[in-house]
Image (cartoon, rainbow, N blue to C red; front, top):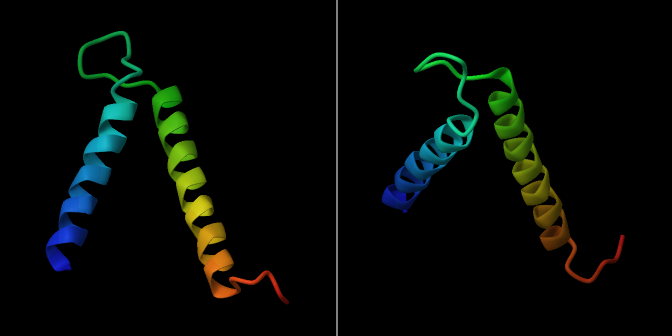
Length: 64
């Protein structure tokens, strides 16, 4: 289980870096704020999606 968590953390960090690097700046090694905004928005949406799915698992029949 620990190995899975570590591997997923590395993949997550690599993925966020890959998304941010899709928005290069004017000079080499420079990144734009739009890339960070897009990446952090996607991360926020993934987190919200996971929270909603966990909420559904808490009450599987849809009862209050």
